[in-house]
Image (cartoon, rainbow, N blue to C red; front, side, top):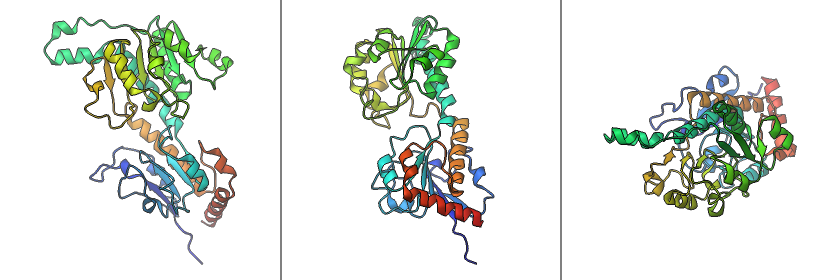
Length: 352
């Protein structure tokens, strides 16, 4: 009797440190154990963009940071799905994946709480001048450190650009600080949905003019690239703060640097940048009114545990011939080539 071929799952090399030790304590790999016919392994080398030789032979790829481009998939026929560890997928060429009959799925449930908490953290750290006070104390300027007065979110206006799952959870958490109003700009949210969440839907310009805290929570799409440029940033209040934990290119970084240097806004908290890693020469690094983190402010053990489990559950679903949850290129689900892959996996699974 012929043996059933292995179902092979590859994980990007950046789940490991350079010495081969795990970077995160738990990414759900225990879910893959004790499944006959399923083999998982880490890719042996890291490249910012996948090369085809890295991907050949896998049925599912679970990926953290590397880009998946059309060139990455040249000649690749075995992969049925790519599990993106995170909620963003701007580093994956969805069109190329669809053309190769590859479903791309993400892990939104694992991201919502840690990212929402991170937004609250940024709001409070900016409000209480945390970075400035910390630096003054470290420099031995104790008395001077008591002088910069903060402000509270209480009785102020919070505005979110985008009102998806992360934004909703962040606003829910921020409501405990009793803001006066919460505004949202999101063309895809209904007025009834906003009212149910105690949020006022407004135009982008109105949100920028009225908000004391502007939270960037929209995905990076062609229409949101440089959404906040010089004109938009000029609409913000002088005492307003900008928090961007979404994607760097949504905000025109040069214009943001200009308004920060001019004191036109009070400050910013940035987890994402136009270029990552952020160059050490960036003017942002010298500003006391700016908090900088390395596109990792939401990284917790719980985040990687939950995202990893969702990715592994998606891979197991594919191995059974089922569609994984949270597919973003939904058109692939109707493609004959993708459906044939699932049918082959179902037959294999029943054979086991």
